[in-house]
Image (cartoon, rainbow, N blue to C red):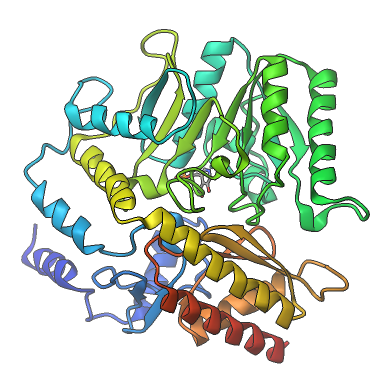
Length: 450
Ligand code: PLP
């Protein structure tokens, strides 16, 4: 390595390299980083060397209040001091012992912990992955292997990831799917999107209608269903919590047809909604639960917790990087810390403050059609007016811009016209109120500009 490369590495390790402008890095990013989900007119180039709790920084040194948790990844906030310290303590632990080839204690303890927090009076096993989509792939393969069937029920909108089987189940935006063929036979049914329900129906009546469509489709398209895959509350699809009766009725259908109920908790799980799992709000017990994001403590990590035995024989599924010892310890730390510090209870309490504040914004601003969510997984749907209910992606984007550029509030979009808030589980009331005030001002600024 040349001296100048080494000097750059050292400067990057200790702080963002100041010798080039933010515009330079923005340009180089657009040239060398493949197009994915970036919105470069919205998000600045971030400073990787700074950040604490709910605060992140851009290269110009601007501080942002972050209510995205890195899309629900950093459940404990940025550089959570006890985790930073724990990572230092375990620096000597071997980082790579392929967990699916070699047994080791950390992954067994982590599996036990995940099984322990997952309801269901039946034998469970855990398969470790490195992403949410892979956790869904695992669930699908486990269901196919066990039921000897290949057909799945999935919903619209739904987001389960962008690889193979997971993408086949996803139906959120056309761009995700166009010209990528489905790898599975999928029966698609409408998700009970209450805000958009037909006039005259209650949310539960509409949920019943959606479930009737599932049953009708199963009867007409084929009852050889391996699994019903569902998010208890959609994330990318628009932050839509399912009505009370939906999951229980899906559970009944799954039982009737001998299919598995597979719940995707990649975004909603691990305390975010005020319970370990969002499905616990609905009193159902799924056969399989998919998790990722928060589980890794900031590192790539996912898991599928399923009916054991998850596979009928060896080599049906594997991943080189899975629950490496150091990663397993970090994940175990995250779960233990969430429990020990009462962060699930905090998520429930702060979720109420956030939800109440967002409902006030709904009352105050004509362009906020609906505020909705569970715990610290909340969203507001932006419309042209309350009366028309017409989706307004342009207004949503203008609000995001006003929030991020004007108010330094880091937010995310979801679906076509929803704004998504996913603060860390240890967020304080002051931070929630600050975020609400900034969002209020951003909505007002975007309305004035339109
Ligand atoms: N499932 C849900 C509900 C998600 O929200 C996501 C990602 O946002 C995924 C699956 C895919 O996870 P990953 O991006 O880690 O593959």
